[in-house]
Image (cartoon, rainbow, N blue to C red):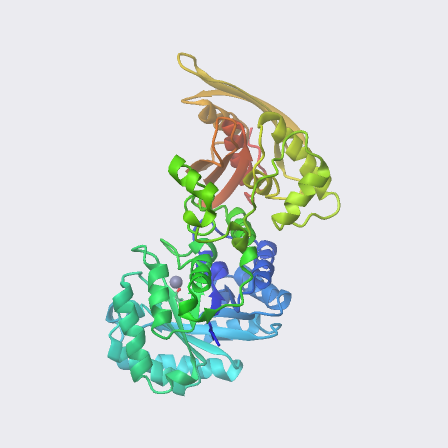
Length: 504
Ligand code: KIV
Ligand code: ZN
């Protein structure tokens, strides 16, 4: 009998707190449903005290998913815990995840407190939470840098106070696998009551060791792993869900099983990536675009002779397709629909027609349409009316010519035209837009990413635009990167909460 490894997903909490990854409540529920279908055991849905929006999202997720435990984060403060319990009211099975810093660094310089006071606060918060809900997980923040004997004391104290799960985070990602493994072993061997609760770990990737440390902790006896899809999370991110799950599956000698339907990994990864505007690096283990592509002659020859010469995983096991069926301008709706089904994209009502129109436009300018292209065409899939739309864009650029742009835009039903020059075609076009909307916004981040290869590729543009001290995120994809850049800017402008977009 293999041991069950509990998959605690924190994509919607640690992942979502990354700048640029913020989701609307509807999008969070969409991700939570995808995580439920993927088979995660626990969904950390958010941090209710952080904002009314987060509180509402946790409430909605608690009602939307039935199978996984829905967890809400709370500092070890009664008012945080009250809100977390309230947000979880509709959950089939709810859990409060509370805790505080346990390293001397945090105790002295964050809380200006003492070890004794920290234990008191931990015990009081755990008791308080247990009076509101049956399932309470306690996190020892910065355990990676905490003294092991102190960890044993606080772990024993919160277990006595009613904690059902104890979480040991390497918050700063400083540990090496040996150090982290020793820490987990030490707690397992010395903390009274530890065998009656679930021992969890939460590893950050600051030194690129999040997955290795998580694995080392599991080998030392931890049975819950806190992970995030695509490894997203604070700073360099958290341990990647897909990596831990596929390690467990590829190594029978570990004797571990999970409840994850691995064939849904690719779809879930791309859903999270597109909703959060967070590209997946091409060489990302398990679900990156290149994870199963072989380019050198020697490797290709080896693969043709026997796939296992260079592949330890079957792409189908993680939900990647053998892209043998190429979609082109001659493909019909049925082929497109079938590809969408394989990619896990559900099309409703008129969406197939809308998608097919978008697909034909792209196929006119690009010979082969990849799965990435299809997923990008379904991004922002709604017939929502935008306040500002681009009707016409003409740019002049090149060596020895002045870069200029002419645009026509409709804003709140009225069409405007303007022209500008700039240091490049994108700069000229953005300046033309600013002539209409006023120079009230600043681009803070501008990222262009090609999806596949070749000069006919689609470019994805991610932009952060600051307006009134707040950052708004714009996204667009097109084979014309100037058009994609302008559309991404307009996508961000459409999110400004101002009454008057036009300032002429
Ligand atoms: O990194 C960390 O310590 C956390 C805790 C809230 C678990 O995210
Ligand atoms: Zn974290």
